[in-house]
Image (cartoon, rainbow, N blue to C red; front, side):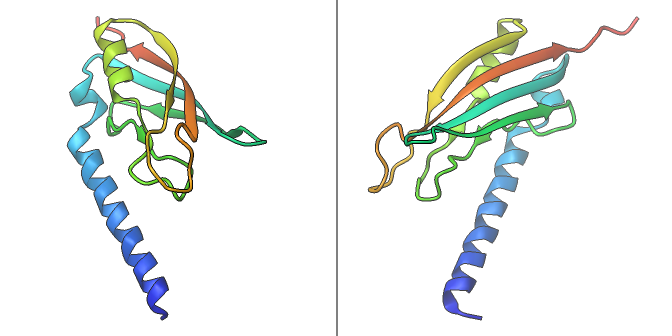
Length: 133
């Protein structure tokens, strides 16, 4: 196997291990946000260029899912970037609101990328668990 393939494979394994570790550290939705039955993220990824909409995505989190709300930047050359919606979700739960909309920019770095090279428009919705009778 060529060295470049081995290096790529090793880097991928390391990234997957780090992701697993970060998800476990985030805890479960049921632990972080008791009383929340569902969290829904509607995301539209944008990039600078002639075709700005890169992807539209909906993510659903149940109480048994990890409360990990960091999305990587979709640009491969972006380093240490991405979009962390943890504070958005936490603020929404603390304020006891049902939904919030906003936009955040990737702050990742790369010599080949302009500042604010990517962004996400988001809508976060929270569904509270029904009290048992």
